[in-house]
Length: 351
Ligand code: MRU
Image 1 (cartoon, rainbow, N blue to C red):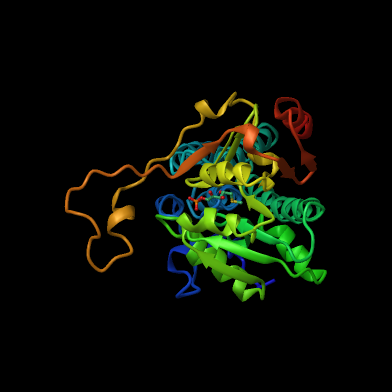
Image 2 (image 1 turned 90 degrees about the horizontal axis):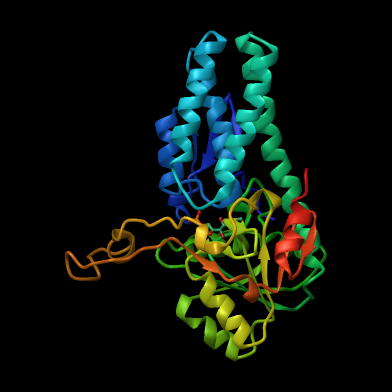
């Protein structure tokens, strides 16, 4: 597996690999200003549900550490302002709010026990580092569970990027590919390009090929053809938020693949750390879908605009796959199958 650290802490700052520059340039940037961290999440310099959560946790610590706030009241005020601000950066991935909630709980608990600013900051740093380390463990574990569903030689289709770059390490749905590779499995991965932001082309095909995994890039509209040709034995995708009934939001285009997989009788596996299970959201209808600038569709990657100036656009960044199309949900605690209403509640548990 290629050595990449998409999100980490260094010199008390948030450090991320700037994913907007990939695959051309591998550049790490350090941040400790709330505005920069907000911009990095919003513009997908750091992206992928788990990585966004880790970035927010380390980010809020970095902002407080550099704030110059010297007492508990000033730190608490800065904490609340920053958490509310970062929470607004992207709406669909639940991990952002989940990580900020964890940091908030730890901050409140620490404030109840101490008035010492250094101690408060040390506690926040400890929690942020733990959120990152737990993500690495969860991803490794999802890989182990996911590998039990796959066999050597399989053709595997994936969408967007739910790999190393989308997490602190390993990835979610690409984790079994890397663990399989360690054991000598010869998977053939098909990455679809994932219009409009091309996470499949720019990120998934980059990290898999750097890691020595056999990967073939296709356009989004070729998925049906590769399935019809018998090249695909399983579809694996990540998830940004799964509702209590198992309806699951992921990158726009995921639902289309699930419908195709159902048509061709191919298993469709969704990889979901328990931090991405949102039992407070009842069904997919309650998930807020981020809409992004139309320029991403017709202008961003082209030397000249590829549509008439002023064309109307619609650019939803995610879609919701109905639970009945998901063959299994792979979490770090095990694999959940239908009925999801019951299974997700049990696996999320009172942990
Ligand atoms: O808009 P992005 O690139 O952040 O979308 C990412 C995805 O849709 C991923 O599949 C999802 O966050 C899961 S990442 C392990």
